Structure formats: structure tokens, C-alpha cells
Length: 331
Image 1 (cartoon, one colour):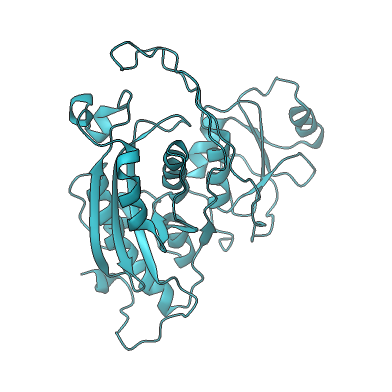
Image 2 (spheres, rainbow, N blue to C red):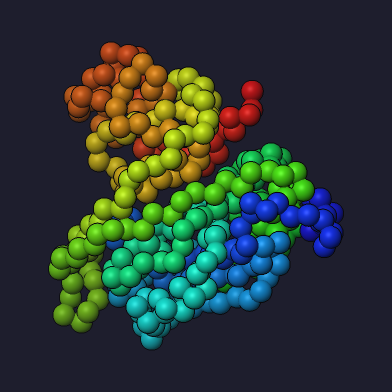
């Protein structure tokens, strides 16, 4: 059924030499989206260079805190109580990732969560490159109404059984990635590979609200911090100009951020980069958009945005548009 929806590749067909030799399709479920949130389950499907499944692996992980939105992932504190800590499974996880390109849907999120867990464990994930299936679907020009995992799966006839279960989400993604990879190989399409930058520093201070029982009450607050290497490759797309209200963001747009964000700033910036946007540290006449939750703050970026007539948008609206950034090839 999958072959009916894309170009079949026979065993004797030459494979692009520049393509990776193996992939680790990953999905993690987490306690939330913030910088101090934790992984509570992880799954890895290992694929060979042509996308064929070699094996798969799944584990629960005790986050040592409240499990977060149980109504989404279904994992309660009771379920996770006897699960291994991340430090207990880090070595096995590494063996599954080693020497492979990490593949995920919205890969920057999965990578950031994984990198943080390794940083806590004073270790480093053996991953050097990642591939986002959202970015790949755009490179292929797939006719998708949106870029949700279930939409990509439906396009290739893949049936989801347990949405937001790490093992089933990883299976679904592996099955959708295989025909995507073959279509890319047939058309000699460049794979949108990005560098995985490990976190280089980690510090942790006592958490507010930690109870004598070892649990965390409503007073839990993020208290840990880290700094990854922030050098990014140049944006490969030309700047299409300023953002226009009511239209989608377009690859190549120059986006700047000002003030506090509810989502970790580094994660928000990485999501923008992965979507094909150019993250700028300053405002100029070429800036397409300023994202700020406080447009009346009077910061230098806000003032310059007003001077140049740069469009201003809050984080929530930007997050919505970030889900479906138009390709640079679209007119």
C-alpha cells in the first residue's frame, strides 16, 4: 500500500552516495514543553540506509516529578513510579542512536529533550545530525493540508493505533519516513539534515516546592539552566521580505525575538531555524517580523521595529504560524 503512494525503488537502483547509512526514528513523550520538563517514555526504530526496519526499542522513564498532561500521554505517577531513571537507560539509548541520523517529527523538540537529559546525566548523546520529517515533506512538496503526524501518516496509508504513545508514534513515523526517503532518493532530493549541538553546560539548584515525600507540588518552578553552542549555519533561503498579516510565514524570513517567552527561547529559535527561517539578533530594515509578548516594553528592538515599520507579533500567534511555514519555492 505504501508503494502505491510514492515512487518504488528497486533493490538494484543506485542510492545517493551522500545519503546517511542508517537512521534512528525517535519519539519521546514528556512532562511538558519547558526547559525543565522531563522525558517519561522513549522509543527508537532503527532503520538501514534505505529505510528498512532493523529493530525497535521502547522504555518508560521515571521523571522524578509530576508526569504533566496525563490526559495526553496516559502515563500516571503510579505507572512511572517503578520505571528506570534516565541515567539507567542512557547507555542503551546511546547504543540505539550511535552513528545514525536522528529522525523525528518536529525533530528539534525531540533532540532538545534528549540533549537535556544527557546533560543532566553528565553525558552526551552520540548524535551528530537530525532530520525533521516536516522539513522533508516540504522538500518533497507533498500535498498535505497541514504538517501533523497523523496527516503525514494518512498520506502514506499508515494507520495510527495509539496516538501520543512513543512506541506507536515512532512506528508510524518510521513507516511514513520510508516512502518519503525513497521518493527523495528517486528524485535525488537534498535531505534537510541539520547539526545536533550537544548542551555544553548544565547546573541544577534545589527545586521550589519539593516535598519531603520526594514529589513536587504546585510550587514547582524551573530552576535549571544550560548553554548550548549557538553558532548556526547560514539560512539557505533568500529573504522574501516582510511578513504580511493573514498570510503564512515563508522560508527565508528574518525573525527577531525580544523579551521573555513562555517557551524556552533557544528551543523557540531552533524551531524557527528548522522551519527555514533566519533568526536575527537585531532589527534592521530587512527584518521580516519581531516576536515579543510585550510590544509596549520600550526595548531597543521594539523601538527600532516601530521606526522601521517592522510587523510585531506575540509568541502564541508566531507558534501557530510556525506549524506550517510556506516553502521558499511556493509563489
